[in-house]
Amino acid sequence: MRYLKHTAITIIFMVIWTGFVSLGRAYGFLLQSIESSGNVTAFIEAIEKKVKKENVGNIAIALVNKGHIEEEFYYSKGDPVDKKTLFQIASVSKWITAWGIFKLVEQNKLSIDEPVSSYLKRWKLPESEFDNEKVTIRNLLSHTAGLTDGLGYNGFEPNQSIQSIEESLLQAADAESYVSGVTEVGIEPNTQFRYSGGGYTILQLIIEEISGVTFQEYMTKHIFEPLKMQNSTFELTTESSMAQSFKSDGTLDKNYRYTALAAASLYTCIEDLTLFLEANGTSNSVLSISTQNVMNQEIIQINKYLMHGLGPFIYGSNQQGDYIIGHDGNNRSAINTSVRVNNRTNEGIIILESGNHNLATRIGDDWVFWKTGIFNFTILNSNRKNIWTWLFIGNIIVVAISIFSFSKRKQ
Image 1 (tube, helix red, strand yellow):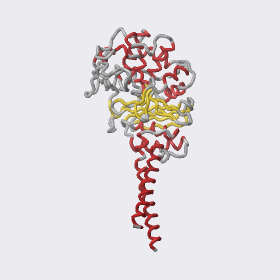
Image 2 (cartoon, helix red, strand yellow; image 1 turned 120 degrees about the vertical axis):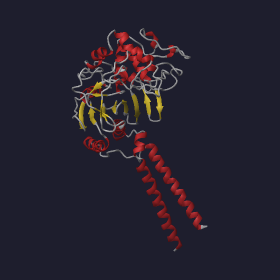
Image 3 (cartoon, helix red, strand yellow; image 1 turned 90 degrees about the vertical axis):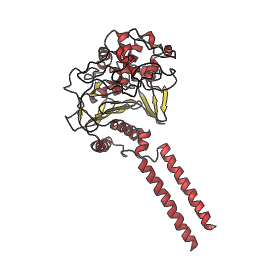
Image 4 (cartoon, one colour; image 1 turned 180 degrees about the vertical axis):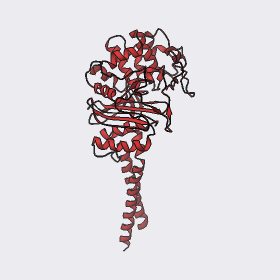
């Protein structure tokens, strides 16, 4: 009887410890950061070890603070890269495109709550079983328009002719085989998040329709030049300062061209993106703080850890007032980019790389957790071994104490 009672008490303590570890995982107090001192140099050194272990191409990383680069790291298995080297930043392009849209809003040339049909002449949304008039610019910016194109764009090889915007919206020739590639309303607008590259291609067309100039010309005049982003372009005319593109096996690949400039095709560098992050959350020559606040509000919950605003993703907030916004990007071959900024402190991170499909994203998540304690699936996954160690060692200690205590009583 004494043995059964002792066993029951042991099991209770094991359950309590398991519950404690589960709470530590859920609330983050048992999760370990990639670097624990809080020193920016030490963080870069920890990231450097990860990069040299996992990257087979090139990478440019900068920790920035109020428009200044605090620490930077560059690595390449091909031609060297630095803060002026242009990388294609894939879907991070969407965040900068959203600034172009809101510049038109501030100029009173469009309203984000008007149906997109009010601004389109060269192309119209195909008829559907849903009311296309419910599709607004706000919906396109937040991926809540009900569009079911599934894009992602693969781009066109250098010797291929690219489609016009209208042709791409009708049927994107550079779509993956498993998506429709047709930009149309397939679910009720404003009911759920459905990522849509086609939505941002519509925004590209709207900018051209309203401004009367090409998308490239508009973004250069109204975004890049005022922010002094002198090296940034959606249409690359020379590849002399362009980073090589690597596949995930470490071999070189081509640099692809895109119809969907707004969604996928911005070429920029660490130096220019540092200026862009400086502009976020501060009054600048492009957008007011009040307009930025509209962009950066949480519009829709994507999952437990991720929200979307009107352009940027929102990676979480904490009780100290930290509020992380940004965007990630993926293109072929193995381009991955991640840009995050804390709107409270104006500190951020920029990671531009090719040769690994998700390394930049994981480093972005590492920085957010290291800096603010805000975590997501990536941090939980990287801490699996640590959590199991806590659970195992704790329960071993409980059992050992139980055995010792029981043997003492028998004596």
